[in-house]
Image (tube, rainbow, N blue to C red; front, side, top):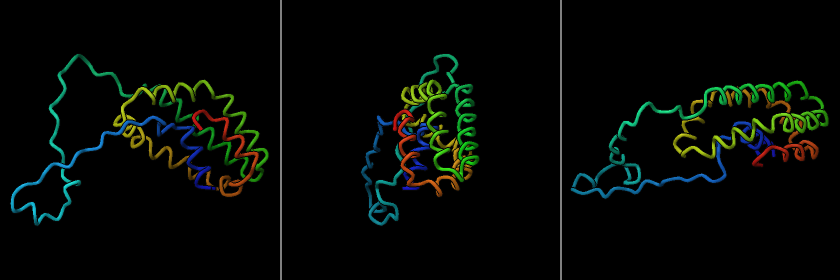
Length: 164
């Protein structure tokens, strides 16, 4: 339950994963020749052929709006502060999480929309780029999540996060 709460919280805040992910599975390339029969790497781990570069069509737009990304970081840090402050009182934490979700509903919606408009590769790059921020917030939230993992009021409050 603790793991679920942690995943739900971080997913809702960072929207690292989109419900409608479109993954393109690489097809294993056929390996030919006698050297292939003795290869240590299975065919599914073979590197795919690089795709040709896309034609230049003017300056590329940033993959994510840096201002929106910064607002997301600030919101995640506020949520972590809330968990730290309320770690000893699960009822207060639940009430504050519910208020936090209501207060940040517009920003959460903007982040969800931005994530939904990006490719799988862009979302993956976003997650990798923000892994340190997410890990720091999760570490700060850990004590409260451990203490309140199965608390019904907190679980109910978590339902107020969009996409959960």
